[in-house]
Image (cartoon, rainbow, N blue to C red; front, side, top):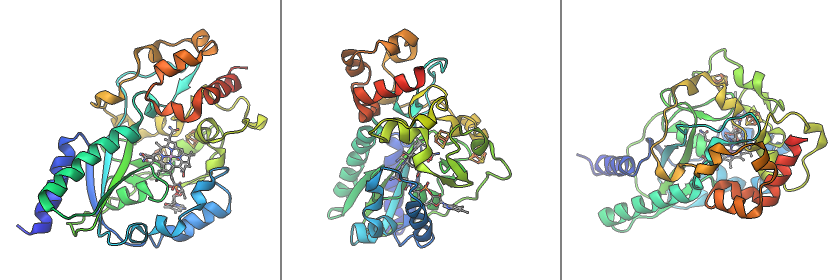
Length: 307
Ligand code: B12
Ligand code: SF4
Ligand code: SF4
């Protein structure tokens, strides 16, 4: 067996052992097609106040500029679809934030994987990325066959839907490369039709500055009054364009114990949210991604959708 095939198999088998759901490998090269798309997106101001999206353009579209010597990108997905969802009558939190912050969970796994590779290969340059600004997670995962980027701009796998995170390892070794799969959105437009803020401005393009996820997580100032009444109870993130996607009928509950919600979260009711204290916030969201918006941010969001 060729050495690069043996190493490709090793990365994948160890990755699956660590609990990742899908693993695919792409050749590291400049993302030519993404250059005009990202430029247009930024020029239109679709990043709103996320000014960090303007940084590192050259690194973002070329991993060999980000980390010279990079030859391969290994993409990973990790399912977060819960076995039980919050009732969305009063306040809703996106499913991705129920349990421990995925950045920590995934980084832990990838660190372990890097150690296995270093023990096996010796001198290998390996860097882990998850949701980090200079790497286009979905584009790499799509290239390596882990799904297609749908009209709602999420990566969708035909057997898993889209409720999963995406991460990658940048490596300075040659591996065997996988190829992409086709787009199965077809004539469907459900996500576009159901987005309450009309953030999916055309198929495959989300105006980030109109997305509930942006308003409730990224925006640090007051939420514009023009958005009043549009959030359908989403107080942190929004799952609508994924909940309505027919491919998510195939979602299966995750088996990642770190993603289990705090028991109080699922049974929280209207008054509990209205009276949420900083102490309870700290307890329920101790390790959660919800901490990104801080106690004041979550209170702002709850107030915005409640009256
Ligand atoms: C910035 C960002 C956001 C912003 C902007 C969203 C966006 N669509 O860009 C905000 C805060 C709104 C956001 C929201 C969410 N996000 Co977010 N986000 C990111 C981040 C950090 C960068 C994405 C990016 O590069 N955007 C820039 C634009 C240009 O890229 P794009 O929208 O993907 O646009 C592509 C298409 O529009 C396409 N395109 C443009 N024109 C055309 C034309 C045609 C014909 C075609 C075919 C394609 C095409 O090319 C563009 C470039 O590839 C990534 C992590 C990362 N480092 O990659 C996570 C990430 C995309 N987010 C993620 C998640 C989970 C979410 C939410 C679901 C969270 C939630 N529940 O609230 C929502 C979903 C909203 C949505 N429908 O996109 C996951 C997605 C996982 C998956 N299965 O796809 C990621 C990958 C994080 C991770 N590592 O897991 N996010
Ligand atoms: S996450 Fe919600 S607000 Fe954002 S594009 Fe999807 S449906 Fe629209
Ligand atoms: S809802 Fe329909 S159009 Fe939107 S991403 Fe899913 S399959 Fe594609």
